[in-house]
Length: 232
Image 1: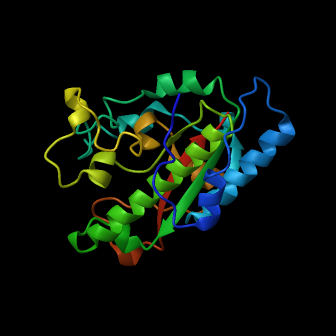
Image 2: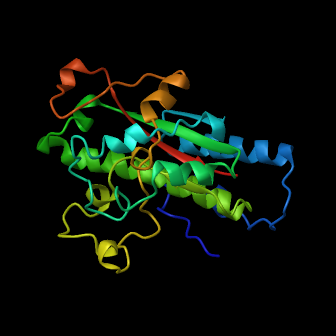
């Protein structure tokens, strides 16, 4: 199995972490080693630009079918347009089954100015950059975990990969059975697979505000994007 290190990091500290020699695969990882690894990934998320990051037990992750339902009612502009958005990605039920085999994850948020999240053509470059940074953090953490021997680690980012990476392209080649343009970088969003991000942020003790299509930046204190990596 081979996994790329993902997007190039601007942080020399995290780059150094990712350049460590791969750790030998072992069947049983000690609790001490796992705690050490999780803390390193949490700190790496902060070094890469996350505002807050924490480790959590997988059973703390709220998976709710109603979250994926919101992709369809009202229908999201990203619904069906790429391989990582519903109905082409994991269902909440499939995610629950997968999570049953894991124990620990690293969850993070990136706070951005509200005008970046409010859908305005004037801030589209900043908006795309913010979403790409969340993908970047997920890519880096997942890669670190992989080379540390947690080879089944996987992550979810924020927003549609189609609009984050291929917004100027006419289609998603993966939907036609062709290779994804960003096969290593792209991920489903947390919401696409049914994770209740609002609940998880609030239960983590952090603030988050709903920003819909009619929201005004002046009415919202901040925007919040989130990502998660399921480690082991």
